[in-house]
Image (cartoon, rainbow over all chains, first blue to last red; front, top):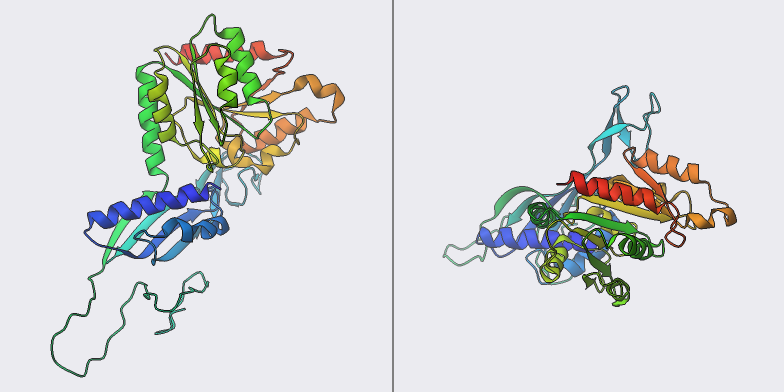
Length: 113
Length: 263
């Protein structure tokens, strides 16, 4: 359950930034999570409440921008949607590809008060 | 959903709030005031902080610090990952036994509980530190930083980090290693690489262990490699048996070559 580590990472970032801005709590946190980031959204939901308890995020609303993965085929340069890291190119069937989107795991912004 | 204005989350999921809990979201409601004296509304001014910050940034920063230390000391570091029971510790023991006369080794052992693995390494007179992660399912780079401070590895040595037996979580956490080595044994399924693609995707080397059991099993070695290469076409394979020593020489050659090139 590495999602707990991820959630605690989010809490640490929020705590630090809220303190830096001289504010006391986060109203809204916006996250960006790619489909190949390695984070299961359900697992993150599951640990969220426990992770944010007593922190500046305790009552924050959380907005998640989920990003579908995309790859660029290294053989034929076709750009295609990837569900799994081992998906092949739909045009030429090659497994050689660059994943260009979908690995995101970011805190985009915080609204603090 | 907000009881005052009916706003909801964009993902369509309801926000469930307890009674008397503050209603927090990104907009204000107008308060109607029919009187004209000043009082404290208790409203704070809201500020938006644009961050675009990687959530694993702290781990990555700590990993970079470890990597810098290893580089300065010319320490070649491996992160050994696998499911529990694939033979990580046995491969490590065999490697240390066979190479310790020609090369300084240090070991960091990661497990949720017990000193068992550290005791096995200690029995070979190799300096070792055990990290018990408790409920944690993987090692993180700050644990390696603390472990290295205790271990005090010498210059020009090889540091082996045996991660917690888990094919999922350790894949996301850079420890500052030079190379990541994933170990799979042929008593597991051929489809492990596509069942747990993240680990195989982030590894540099794949050691296939328990090769001495091949005649007794229905294991399709080619299928395993095909699956692994679909996930990561850079993977380099070694087929070994830590028990019989079969194939270990090729693994040692790789280790020595990489150590020499790291200089």
